[in-house]
Length: 46
Image (cartoon, rainbow, N blue to C red):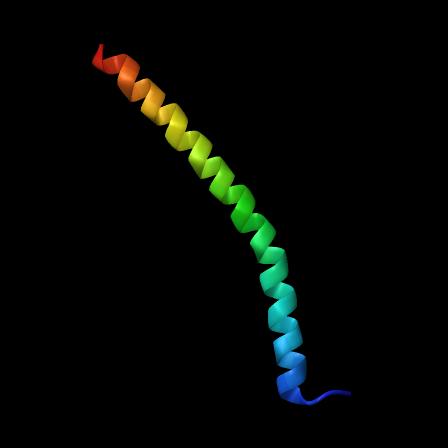
């Protein structure tokens, strides 16, 4: 078995990797929602 610090760094890297995908999807969703809201705001002004 590796040292505690080695194990910890591997675990943290693995968790960050899986989280990165979720953050990317979340960012895309937020962008789309912002676009929709901007569109609705511009149509309601007219």
